[in-house]
Image (cartoon, rainbow, N blue to C red):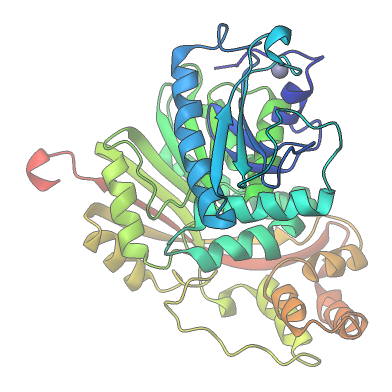
Length: 432
Ligand SMILES: [Zn+2]
């Protein structure tokens, strides 16, 4: 599983998240980023995740993956920048002009009349590189996606905040994910998909449970969260975990390739949940299991309700979304959950309530919990959408008052309500 790595190599350090780069796309075998010293505007590199000096050292399968990625990047460059031409080249050995000895393919947009050059010596404008990376990434994973709104939300709006808050957030909902995982009774050797894996805590836990010889693929729409997830898996030194930026509703998973599909609060955001679960069912082998945890209604989740009511004293709350609109409470109605899963072709649907007292925003002071809730959850969302910095202190004071009765030696402890849901793909081929 571990790809070759060279500690002295700057591209290897970028792959590991130890050196900065304007990344466009990552998958199992390749990474795409803006060339830091672009020869032309939009100059992009596709590199192998593993360290191979050049084309001679890289395995053919890896080079095929590079070609597949390059085709998508080329398309994204064409739709985003509409250059007159696109030059694609790859250099092997100093005599050929190679300067970084880790395999990489250049994609260089070209205009008519532009002089031909292979390398520039001047670093590009970082803000322009960041903008191009974001636009190419959007062109690659957002094109015609039914979940484009969620993709934007999890990449631009909340993704970066959740990465910063990851430890606290993960600590808070960790027991709920573990209940759902325990229900699945994973065994070594199983192949698992972790849907909406976010910052990867559950993916790492699953990898531990299916070792040796099992594997887990974490998918999410949020690039910043996936970067955190990859770092976490590499720090945890678990085998068999990998991550992909993919929309589980439409991603072409290999048919019948999985033993288990799991999610911790990652399945409530699909624009078309029935289509999404049908896609996930097709990825399960006959007899394969599905298990997830999702929120019950907001009234059964005081940890979200109480701060939201407090914030409502100072903020105009957005109108409540339609009960089946994508969002944290879209699967709150168990009859709706059952009907979606059964219409998607799953059987043996079981839905059990889980009531758990959560420690909000870590076991620290009241102020730390308030600070956390100003970043994460429905009150945070309303505050963000109000976009008035002057409101923050007043909302903070109101939330602080509302939380005070729940604060004790173990931090702020509040009730939560969720569903632990399980189902299967029918084992009998006549029912598939
Ligand atoms: Zn390298």
